Structure formats: C-alpha cells, structure tokens
Length: 391
Ligand SMILES: *Cc1c(COP(=O)(O)O)cnc(C)c1O
Image (cartoon, rainbow, N blue to C red):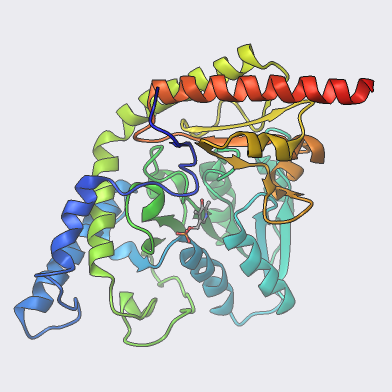
C-alpha cells in the first residue's frame, strides 16, 4: 500500500528536490549578500553564485548566460514578453498572434493589450490540441509584431510545432515567444533548434523553488526592444529591476543541472508509468478518451475523460489522490477548461475529465493504486447513474 495521499498533480507544481534545497540553504544564512554589492566579499559570493546558476539555466535550454533574464516566474516572464515587445513598439496598428489554448498568463496580457487598442488573433488548435502551422501562417498580417505559442500545454500536455512556426516568423522579422513552463526539464528544449526569440520557464515546475523564473531573450543586433514591467536599480540589463533572489536563483540553477543530466532517463521511466496508467484505466473502466494527441505529448501527462460519469462526484470520490479536473472547481457550476473546450470536448465530458501529472517520485505502486481507485469509482458512479435513469 503506497503512502497516502498520492500526488499526481506535477503540472501544478513539483516538490523541491532535496539536492536543490541543500544547494540553497547557505544562501539564506552565511552567504546572504546582495549580488549587486560591489565592494565586499558578501556581494561577490552572491554574484558568483548567481553567475554559476545563470550558466546552468542557460545550458539546460541551449542559451548563453547573457540571454538569461531572471524573473519571479513564468507569469512574469510571459507578461514581460508579450507586453514588453508590444509596448516597446510605438507603431500602431500592431498585431499579435497567439492560441486559444495558451495559459492565462499569456491570454490575459493579450486581452489587456486588446483593451489598449492592439489587435490579437487567437488561433484554434486541431482536435488533437496541436496547431496547424498553416492556420498560424494565415493569421499573420503585415503589421504582426509578435507570435506567442506555448511549447507544451499545461492541461493536455501536447507539444506545439514551434520550430516550424519559427520558419514563418523569422523571414518576416516577427518576434516569436514560447511559454515553455511545462516543457523545460521534461523534454529536450533548445532555443537554437526551436528558433525562438523569447522563452519563458519557471523553477517550481522542474523541482526547484517557487517564485523564480526566466525569460530567455535572444541576443541580436540591434538588441530586441522590450519595455520593462519594473523599473528600479537596472538589474538584469535593465529588463527587470529588483534585488536578485539569490537562494531562489541558486535553487533554479541546481534544479536545471539535475534536469539536464537526468532528463532522458526520467522521461523514459515516467513515460512508462504514464502508459501503464492509461492501459490500466482503459482496461478497468472503459469509456475512456484521451484528450489531446497521444504522440506529440509530454511523457508525464495524461488527460482523460470518462463517459457516463458526473464530474463533481468523480473529484469528490478521489479523496486520496491529488489530481486536477477538467473544470474550475471554484464555482458552483464548474466552468469547463478553455483548453478542453477549444479541442471540442463537450462540456459534460470536460467536467468528467482528469489531468494526471506524474513526476520524479511517482512509483508503479502509486499508479496501480490510482488505477484501482479510479476504476472502482468510475464503475460505481456509472452503476448509480444507470439506476437513477431507470427509476
Ligand atoms: C505554471 C505555468 C505558468 C505560470 O508559472 P508561474 O511560475 O507559476 O508564474 C505559465 N505557463 C504555463 C504553461 C504553466 O504551466
């Protein structure tokens, strides 16, 4: 019997790897200096640690240290990318292309820009969740300044064809941003191979601490103009002022280094567990549909809908397994996820969906427990609803 509750929500956040915690601890206590202090050894120690971490983060994504702008997380990185590029360009009209299935940290800044008079086109995905590159091409206008398409979806795990989108944006001089918060550390991500100008990632999705992220900014001549969100001491080459979060940055660097060396083995191990989960659910429960492509997908993601099941009872019944549902559970009448809607999942089926996120500490024993738990719950709920319909 595995220890309960079981955590299968690694897309929401990940525990910090103990090796990462060990690396961070001295930077809260004896090495507490401000990385901007130039005149004493406390400052130098902090600055050296930040430089080393920056190199490790850069290495994980195939970038140069000078292209790493440290932020508070992927939400800030996305806002800095989207708002920063548009607001640095005085020309109007200006046009942005993104997708309907993006994270709210991209969609909401786009909505705000629309209220400010910027045109935005939201490209819909195919039913498998992946965008048709021809649709992106059709959306491009002579005054398109930015295209923002995520590398991997946080709900259905599908991988978008970023390198092929770059073939469209690059010759036209359009800036390409990708929100890679779910992809970095889980699948190989190389900014050169992807051909992106900007990339967002965050430490707490890859076994690092919360509150520290990165915006990769491609170095080129002339320098890419980005309007900062925060002005102050001119940190991060003027892109993001504020005293550096040294322990967080050190943790991000340590987490990045572990991902770089262990990514491949981990993806294989976790991918096999994910396949075991799907096989178990399909066999035991039936009436299971996988949401999103089954091939171009993160190895640790599974998003499934169960037919003939009422969504709310499903989540309530899974009391000792931490997963996410296909609906916002904050409201009385749960609103189905915008991602499932965008790929055409009917609302009742979206409410009866579960997102499983597996990770570094997921075991086969936990997966077998989860399969058995979901299987018996789904079958019980279906029997109940059949009885209800008969009477
Ligand atoms: C988690 C996540 C974010 C937000 O990252 P934070 O660091 O929590 O702000 C943005 N985009 C995607 C795809 C995510 O999964």
